[in-house]
Length: 212
View (cartoon, rainbow, N blue to C red):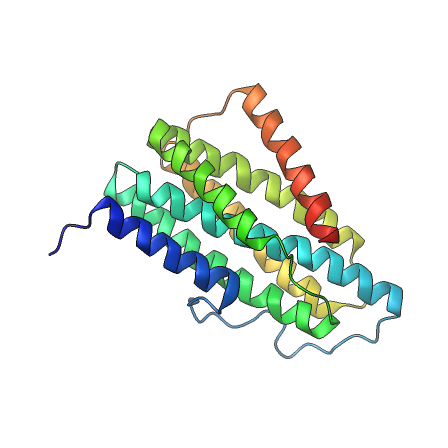
């Protein structure tokens, strides 16, 4: 088996970023949770609200791809590296589902998706360099924040939009599972200042992605 060099890994990351931002990345082939549900008759305001929320969620999944890919490259343990890559595959499902809902509502994806990907890739790589336990702790805290964020979006979605709701419910279940896996694998609890900084960065990204 060929031993991959740092250059090989970096070229792979570039390929993955292009697939994530500009193409349709490979998914796990799980069925879209929205399949079979009726398309709601939304008012213009409701449709615009749904589009803004889903643009945020889609941008978050782009960032998650960068995060997991950066962590996978710098992980020390092969089992942790594989866990990161499996989680990234499930995040690709979320990307596909969110994109389908964006198209249905006539909303565009965030124009800053390349920035979300590479910014998160750098953060993930640094977390991995710090050590697997800290990297897993970063996953745990990130996914817990995402779960709370999805709870907020589920509360704000138009009540009749069953398709978008089904997608976000499944995403929430997956994110909670990713957090649980990280804790089970030995995640360290991040210091309070780092958790607070992560919340601030998340709010900035959310506010920006909603508009751009």
